[in-house]
Image (cartoon, rainbow over all chains, first blue to last red; front, side):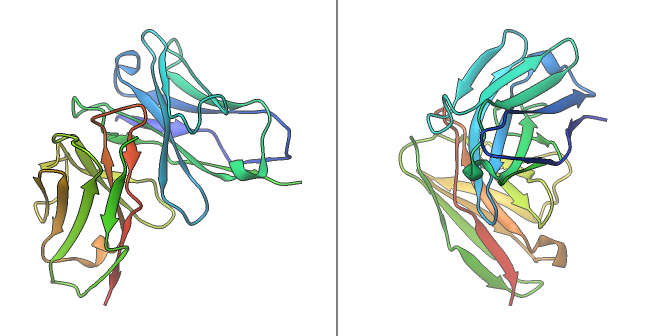
Length: 120
Length: 108
């Protein structure tokens, strides 16, 4: 079964660091773009960026460039989203998603989401 | 950055009726548009890619079409499980790929 499984709920304080994960299985992880999508409370979807695990080619939305780091470990089929200093405005659900079956860069496989709450 | 504008924001429909959702791109995105469905508490699900190709397992009552920079998702004979929020996305020019603001299909 093709799936992405994300790490669990996080509750952090402003200024803390965080790294969340997304493990792929059932497909060739290294050769499919995998990305991250933010959904703030009650709001729509925002495309943050993607990585190609095979060569670590990473593309960011200008809105998120410098704010987060996307990485991947092809040996464990895991993608990561990292913050060095969280802000309250980072409170959101973060989805990982990949482009497995369609041959396009539309996201056809999604993780279950990781809820991140940043509060003092 | 390409802006995707969805309309209406909310669509009230009765079961069995047809829902027509629109999405306009601020510039040409060719046919590189996808539609997603999101239900409360769930991750989005891909419905349509390439403007009109149904993703695996998606019922035939969901169809997509395009005319220039205008894209349409049509849901025929609406079922109870179709009440949800729908998003369009362009993946022609990225980064960034961009989503529309969403259309909520609610029970009339």
